[in-house]
Image (tube, rainbow, N blue to C red):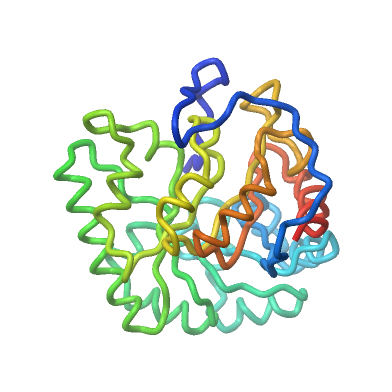
Length: 290
C-alpha cells in the first residue's frame, strides 16, 4: 500500500484563498505564543520494516531521539505491509513493549476493511492497548458524490459505535482527497460537511501542501474538528523533497501551531516517508518551539 502520491510539482500549485502563499525562505527563531504543551510523536509507518524486525530496538532508538509518543498501525490490518511480526501480540502485550521503551501510544491507524468488517474486535484491541483515538487511515474515496456520501455515512455509524465504547474515531486524509474534486470542490471539503463532528474527528496530513493546501486554513475554518496531524515539510526549491522540520522548508510552523490550538489538536506525529533519518532533526526542532 502506498500512502503518498507525490505527483505534483511546485509549478502546478494553485495559490488562492486558503491555499499556500508563494514559497519563501522563512527562518523561525521565536517560540509559539502562549506556549502549548503538544505531545510529539512519530508515525510507525515510516519505520515499518525496522519495527517488523525488532520493535523494541526501534522504539528505544526513537525515544533517544526525543520522541515520547508513537502512533501505531493496527498489526492485523497492516500485516501485509511489514507489520506481520506484531500480529502475535495482544493489545496488552503490544502496549507493554511500547511502554518499556519509554514511549506512550494513544492513537492507532486502522484500515477501512477492519473498521467495516471487524469493528467489535478492533474496539477490544484498542481497549487492550489503552489508546484514545481510532483513526481510519483511508476509505473515503467515492468517485461519485453519492458514493462518497455513503462512505461518510458508514464512517459516521462506525464513529458512533466507537464513541459509545468510550473512544474517539478519526479520519486521516491523503493528497487524493484534495486532488479529487466534485464540481470544483475538493473531496476533503465535502467530507468535512458529510461527517458528523460528534462522532468523527479529523487527522490532518500536512503533506497536502504539495497540492497547495494549508492546514491552518482548515484548523481555523473548522475549529475543534481535529484530533491530531501528521507533519511533513518540503524544500522551497523542490516540493517533492522532504526536509527536516524548520530547516528552510515551505511550512510556517509557528502559524501552524497557533492555528492548531483553534483546530483542537491533541497530538502531532512526524511522518517522513522518503528519509526516516529526518525524524531526529525534526523532533529537535519541535522541542525548541513547543
